Image 1: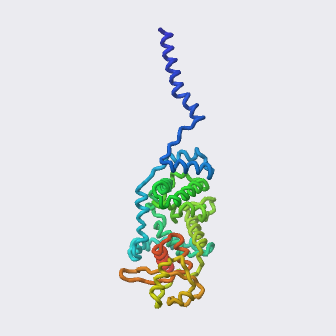
Image 2: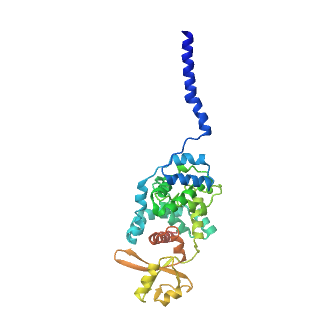
Image 3: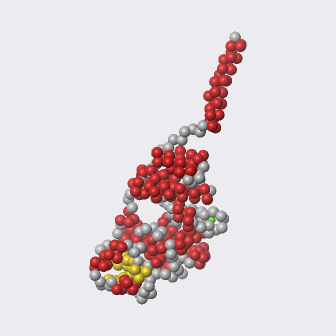
Length: 341
Ligand SMILES: [Ca+2]
């Protein structure tokens, strides 16, 4: 009887050894099959390993964690900012509370802002205004989404910008590697923009600076890094200290010509001399060789204002491609400039 009992115990022992002990042996030589949420993600995984030299074991938990969020696509498809008339846009972004907060923030950080302005030769008022419009100077609430899910959702569900989201996804992984960040712990806006100045990963990689000298580029909580990064971005976008941003303009020429210059867009510039030839008059006397483009915007309901846009306006617009955006940043920067004691 005793022998039989021990035999029974032994057989339990062996069957446990088979089910628990042997399986890990297989796991070492034959990794569990990776399940991808789409065939596109399988090819992306392969590309990241083969072409971009990411370790497959590093990528595996990241790919397993992807959550596709269709609500992000709904938001991306609703670019409200561009469709609003300027007076409505301004109401939304440049309200009293933000202006008050901006003036206080600008004063509070004056020493650091002045140092950055001096180093990069970029207006500290414009740097401040951009942070105000982007995230209300870093208020929580903009970065509601897990960045990794945003790029993956854009890649999976947004054919119109699939290539864009794919390249930002790759830049994001490169950025996390470079800055030693956990890709799954980083939050972003619904559009995938990161930190107080809302840089996309590719811009973060290219333009973000280590302003405080700790060898990291921290766009979430280091003001020195944040200011230096925005300044560096604007400088590379062509900002000229003391340059013109925008000036009111009048036209008396052929309305067809005027419509043409407006339709051509902000990037299509001409010299002030040429503008004068087609009947456009700019309110101040400036260098005739300055390059100018034009826009019509609505400062208030029922009113259209024709403006000449100069080099520094185009530097701001390269930060966020909307005339309304660049206009509201300009207005806030002017308010800050006037608030100086
Ligand atoms: Ca730093």
